[in-house]
Image (tube, rainbow, N blue to C red; front, side, top):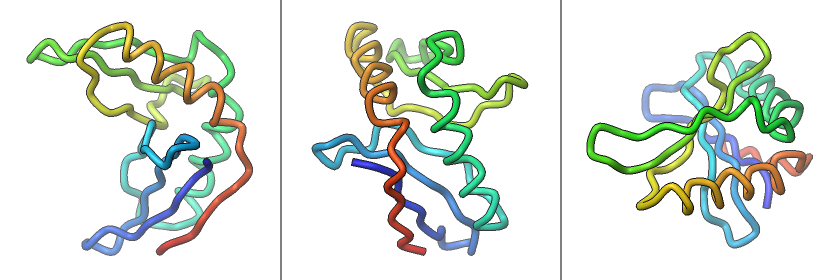
Length: 108
């Protein structure tokens, strides 16, 4: 359980938050600088406990997902796609549970 920083094929960085079972429950956009990805992790740690920071959404194909936003409204993480709203809500609960983790594995 915790965060993982990786380097994409284009040289940019991104992070993922993993649940205790190792499944990715939230991922970031890509960042040019590793420090920006690290700042994104700090933002998730800070904002993941506030229910009002989650935007519950439905994709055009009907699958449910969510985004986590910072206080300024900027998206700091996006979930995977879920088959139902209840599964999405369980994903939000998982982020609330794991989001405060200070464990960061740098695989970049």
